[in-house]
Length: 547
Image (tube, rainbow, N blue to C red; front, side, top):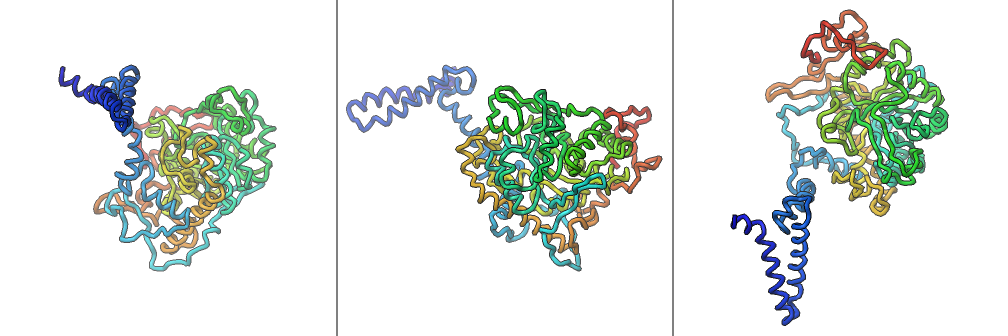
């Protein structure tokens, strides 16, 4: 007991004694005053520790107990800068972040002395090069047309674009710099579901207007969809495409609540919501509740926008629900112009840990399922596929294109190009680089002109690296990449082509009876166009897996 008391209160007692003794000494010798002042301050801290009730460690170990919380606060920085391995992804590795910084700032990104990766690890992947290399293509020409025969205003989109990040999540200066960089490089800037802010319009870069369940920018006072307000905004020449957000990687199936005290006048103006009231983003869209109603909504948006490309974004969840949407396409003949597949590894904002860690389908599996379903239903040629989720490098782009993507989006990659240092303080309003904060003073540190140039250079240099990579594989266009070009190590002494590693359906395969792939066939039979709920199959085998 005595030993316990000594270890718990020993330092506090020493500080008390030191304060008393040195205070008397300081009366005689004035040079001693700093000592009792410092020790006295520590005594006051110890008294505060003993008086508070929120932290047991501080009550049991006055003064010293605070070290625990100091080290806890410093841990992310100490780990990132002193102890983290170069290839350790938390969530992005030092190597990945450095690559973006180098390309954004026009620094040499060459790597000396060989790879840091273990090429015999089971996760290692690579592209097979060719004995007949091709000329390096011009990366600025890596563009494709989005818009099927139901679209009156197709859009020529870059292969590599800015993924959805709202004003409010990002600062005004971050939005300005992203949009100016997009204009310089002629690529697209997704607004995020927070609506089109004045900062999105300032530099005139191409916009993809994301329409979430809150319908910000086109909502009634009750939060319902307002067709007239939508048409007014959608006809703006800067808006090139409309994207209906069904779900997102970081928190699929999770709504959002923006407390009234966080709604600034600018956010209220952008979202067209009142100040002084909580703002709710429902988990599901109020405008539709079935696959058929969803496609009617997409057709309505296409008509109201004057025929601009309209599509949707989702993080794949229950697979029969996506197949239900595809069955509704076949039944109604309403086909979206594009679909963006967001992986569960994505996410720029804060989310509940369980949602970030254990909800939603990772990008590769989600993208492959969406691609296969569209191929199997005979609709793939009418729908362009975008992909997003931890895409940083040229190889990341090549990998998802081999899995079926037509173009890619990146969020955190472009945040790094703005100067983000992965402090993971996005939700605190204390972002040290001014990227993810509404603090006017903090965001002044982000110089729009300089950061816009970095955004542009990151885009251009990444696509240039892709052009060089595919040229080494004997290709001139990214869309020539096939699953035969990518290799995955499955064990220390075996590798497999993506063609043999993943299932790829044949065109129209789902329309034939019976469907040869057991997993796809079973899920296809469970899907119904009139409802997102599955059909219960009495003959459904238990434990079925993709094949």
